[in-house]
Structures are given as structure tokens and as C-alpha cells.
Image 1 (cartoon, rainbow, N blue to C red):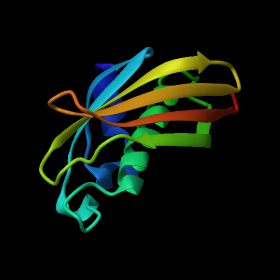
Image 2: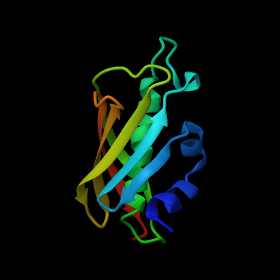
Image 3: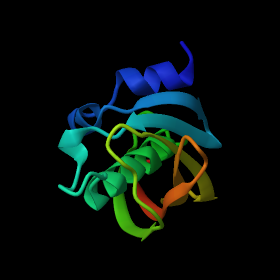
Amino acid sequence: MPLHTALQNNLPPFARHLGFVITEATQERIVAELVVREDLGNGNGTMHGGALMAFADTLGAIATIANIPRSAKTTTLESKTNFVTGAAIGVTLIGEATPIHRGRTTQVWQTRISRQDGKLVALVTQTQLVMGA
């Protein structure tokens, strides 16, 4: 089974609620698409900042999971988001998580969230703690 299918089939409940689809997965890169829905909106016709952060946080966690032993777990220690522009309801977003550091006890991932037209929406850097490795 391809890695992206295995990861998609094992998403936690909140990630399933967000409704994104993993389109590519390797130990070097996780890519997913998410359609901005009304229930992810901020009341102004664009995606809520917290939903953007949750999308990126989940991709960083998935990327870490792809790089640690099956018996290990991960949790976010730190996350920083730069919001660049909005994403209107109905727009498809592409999230791409790539590694900055993949250590035994911590990993740092950067996730770019862009619209389909290539315009950057947000840039997120997060540190994941690896437990039980």
C-alpha cells in the first residue's frame, strides 16, 4: 500500500473533520489538498486562521509519523504561523510539509499552504517532540 494511502486511512478524528486528502507522501515531503468549506470559514468569506494552522499542524505531525518507528508517538511542542493572504470559501488549498530537522527526539517541519493558483496563504514552522523512539 502506498505511504500516502496508509497515512490517509489512519488520520485522527480532527484531521478527518478538516477533510483534506493526502496526495503525496514520502519521508521528505507530505502534500495534501483541502477545499475551503463554509464550516472552516471566519465569517468574512475566507478560511479561519485557526483552521489554516490546524491543517499545517496536522501535516507536520503526519510527516513526523512517517519518519519515526511505529511504536513512537509525536506531539507538537511549538508552532509559528505567518499569514500571507486569505483563502476564499470554495478555493482548494495545497499544503506541503518539508523537513528542516529530523532528529531522534525532535523534528522541525515547514509547511507551505498555497492556493491552487500558487499564491502563498500561510507559512508554518513547527517543532514535533518524538516520544518512545
